[in-house]
Image 1 (cartoon, helix red, strand yellow):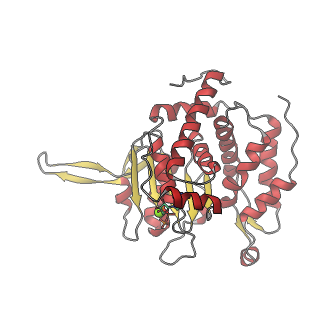
Image 2 (spheres, protein in one colour):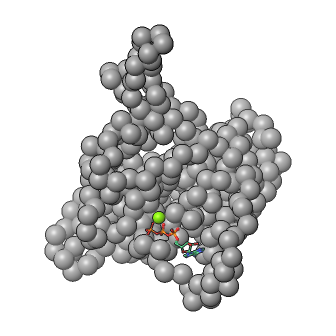
Image 3 (cartoon, helix red, strand yellow):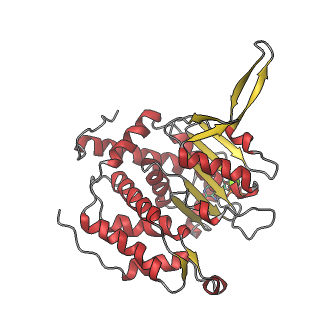
Length: 326
Ligand SMILES: Nc1ncnc2c1ncn2[C@@H]1O[C@H](COP(=O)(O)OP(=O)(O)OP(=O)(O)O)[C@@H](O)[C@H]1O
Ligand SMILES: [Mg+2]
């Protein structure tokens, strides 16, 4: 069990324990999902930074397999919602039903009352239903029939979606995609991984074990807040964000909320990599996952297929930083 650290700075035994937990989670996820550990590392980063993750990829690249395996390792109250065109907001949040015995209305809580929510194929439900989830993600509370209910802690949403060009989907409103701390794009596996997958999943994979529980997750989240970010690195984050705002192909650059998101995520990544301070590399490796989905390209750039990711890669290349003294 990790002790909560009141004073700034993190004790070495806490760092070691986080390292052990993260390694076990990566190993457990690896039983069901074959792919780069960096993907599980991104999920862990969002978890400890109290953020949510959107995973985008073509059908059959193991999006659901990945998030189910990850959720099982957390040993938390886990719910899964398959988003469909007829899903209503109350199917997410809950609804009041009449209890015949007492003749009163009682709340039947929706799946959002959990610790880990898998929102599968989130872009198959209409905007109103998506909004119910996105609000819950931001506020950690929901309003049902005018009454506000607080959600459990920890609360993390792992959502999947197919690329928006596909038929029968409702793209998430651009202004709301930034409710997700991280957006991961999952492509086709490396040839060697795919070969190993074929050999391994000839038969059902072994069950994924729970490695932690809700209390451990909360403790790791508390530790992540105490990770140190040097002033030079705060300036580096600002430099990256400002680069997107000045870029000629960008219509709407990264917001202050995006800058904050990058800082929180970097602290999370530093922690799970076993440090109590952020390095420039944490920021650089996370920038595409945290910033790319928060900027809008000009129509011309969109037509030419210049993506937000390309701008972030360029930013990481061109924006200089002062090395922190530590
Ligand atoms: N990298 C991989 N590691 C493990 N299993 C894989 C991998 N790629 C594909 N699979 C297998 O392919 C099948 C499809 O995976 P899954 O249902 O998770 O895909 P998905 O991305 O959620 O697809 P969809 O978008 O249609 O929901 C599963 O049986 C899964 O085990
Ligand atoms: Mg799926």
